[in-house]
Length: 229
View (cartoon, rainbow, N blue to C red):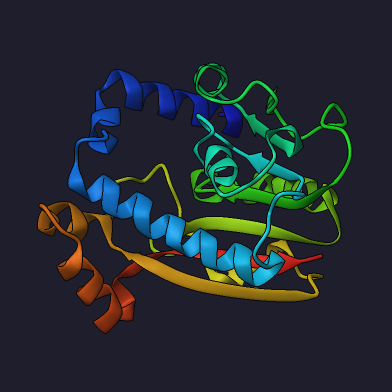
């Protein structure tokens, strides 16, 4: 089966099967996940760019409903400098409805229709959704081609296979180094308590989850990888 078709069908089946409710806003662990992810992203961006992101031109690959781009705007990013691309038309429709009109949206692969080059090209839990090695490599090359000299690549993803979902595959440090072997500079940070644990222990506060994450690094399932062109 074509990899793109497989991914579309998986997301459609997830939505129809009600699994989107697993990520609903009213679950405390979702707020923990969002808060920890934003903390990791803010540290990475500050390390790469300093205190201001107002001038950054950003391409978010697999942007979904646009959460990351809206976060950048809340931190001072300029909507007219932001582009989101995704394979799923319904996600982009939601993104347009919820986001400033100046953001540009693109349906499909990274192509010449996405003009120019960017200071930051990002992908959040995108590579783990791709099982085919050749498709991963092709996307990695397309993303790299869209980065300005001395610009940065950002990947947010997870480093362990899921025992509950064989439609995703972990992204290891070795995988990252193979996908972008020519980067000038790299750094990586790990975080987030394993979702099967966080969903069970987080009720009204995050302190126990943060304690476990601090004391036992192997429980940190996700990472942010930054590579400079």
